Length: 297
Image 1 (cartoon, rainbow, N blue to C red):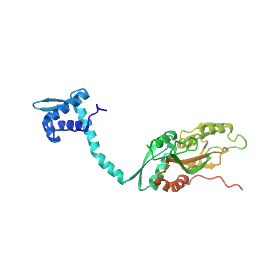
Image 2 (image 1 turned 180 degrees about the horizontal axis):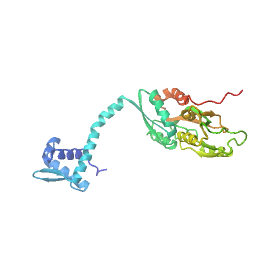
Image 3 (image 1 turned 30 degrees about the vertical axis):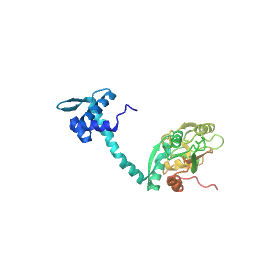
Image 4 (image 1 turned 90 degrees about the vertical axis):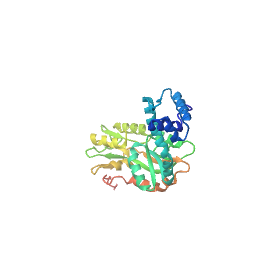
């Protein structure tokens, strides 16, 4: 760390390149010219190259010196803004929140509306990495679906947002599932579990006769289902988001449930706890287009 330039080094180089003179730079910085010369020479020794050519007519930056001064000006500009940015952060309420790709669009839109007085900085990653970030303190909270499937680090708490059953989304033109033990016999079925149950879901669909194909995200699964005109098995939470007017949502022949949780350090952020009931309602509102199966007679 001792080889790093100091702020005084950066200010000196910046002043020299602006004035073209070591003496003028020294006067601006309120130091003597010999002191400025010694400091510049020490800086050049640490860097390992000459930054300025100096003679009786002044000081001219070398190519290395020009690059150093560009970087010095950038760092100094950033440093000048630190106090202002810190004060702005102190005056505003900010939260850094993470979630996984399939939930990101709907979640962050809902949080933006519900948390009008709080600035939410979004992060999108997969669940295990998000939990690591919460443990480290990089995230204030993570909205995940694996909180009940993995051990949480000490000091973390999981607050349930909602539970959502698996459903079968049937895009227009997709065949209806059959009956019996193999209702998907001979059919392609796309699936997206959104938690750690994907392998189990794939096995169950195969046992039901399906040619099971995974979707990388909920949206991708629905798009594949539309292209192939086949059934899509996924949580009703996201099935309703992407349902089109002529789609039908039906109960699946496979039981499964997804739990969305907010994981944070204890205590959980009060700003997020306050909006959780409304957030749950917005996440489950879904699309008004999907047709539901008729009630059982």
